Length: 237
Image 1 (spheres, helix red, strand yellow):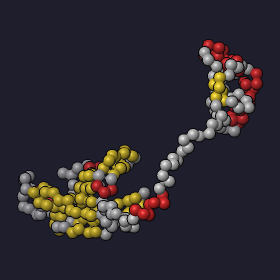
Image 2 (image 1 turned 120 degrees about the vertical axis):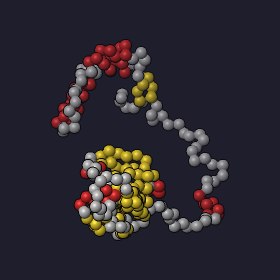
Image 3 (image 1 turned 90 degrees about the horizontal axis):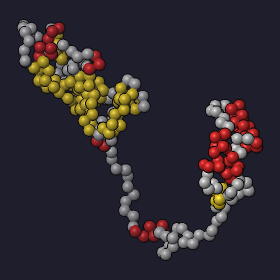
Image 4 (image 1 turned 135 degrees about the vertical axis):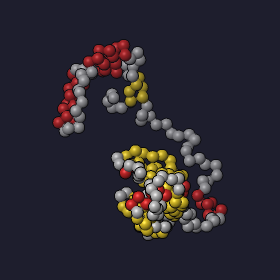
């Protein structure tokens, strides 16, 4: 007459949930703290609801099929933050009640025949409101004169209107670039590249291939219709 154990207790958001992320063993909620409300609900009624140090008593529980009455059943909710038990100060719990079938949760009866009789308003969970944010302490109103020292002098710009020219990073076309790229698969260019590759491989920093760039060198003459731009520096780059 009861649901499967994984479905015995339900926890669900009411408001403040942006989205839920599936994780091993459950879901992680991304929420807005000022709007967060959620509830827990169990298939078994409780005589006491507990959130942190807050205890909300209710009517004792009866189990008609077992012919038992006046039982104690506690529905306990604990809040954790980064696997640490969180104090529930400021969290507001309220009883969540439902009508439950009397044939299961009613008092003693001489008949076991099924009926539509219910036991009204039995606590089955907790409606929880997260603490609402509060404004931090204020330094009050500032007089406008306090801001005068932060203003820029009238008529000046933070950036110069006519900056001085700087040719340190000017690029220019170099007709010899295509010929240099055509020799990328041999000579000093290849030897230097092989040395760098060997050093990185020995240090465990590189495990990829060391391409000879033959295709690039063979096609340099038609791949570049115009000479590539190079930086005006002491050596070609």
